[in-house]
Length: 102
Picture 1 (cartoon, helix red, strand yellow):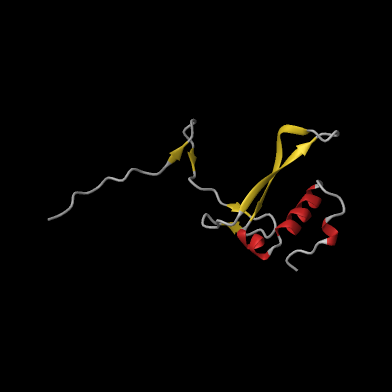
Picture 2 (cartoon, rainbow, N blue to C red):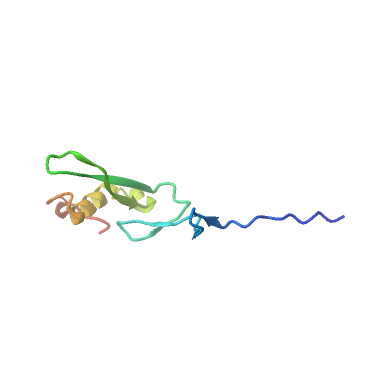
């Protein structure tokens, strides 16, 4: 008459040191400061590589930029990347010409 009780294991994830870690850590869009939800399949994260004075990529050095699907759907992703890269010092004099979410 009754189904047996099913024991569901706990979903606590631990690293090698025994510290609890979360299953999902949400990201924030760097252009709008909105939280990027797990169901936002249009969002992207790209890594801008760091280079030395001669323009050669420095192995393992990069800056991540996360953009939500909202920004991409509006067609403002290129302007957002230009604005963020100028703000971070990767570009000079490009973002002033572009408007974003205005």
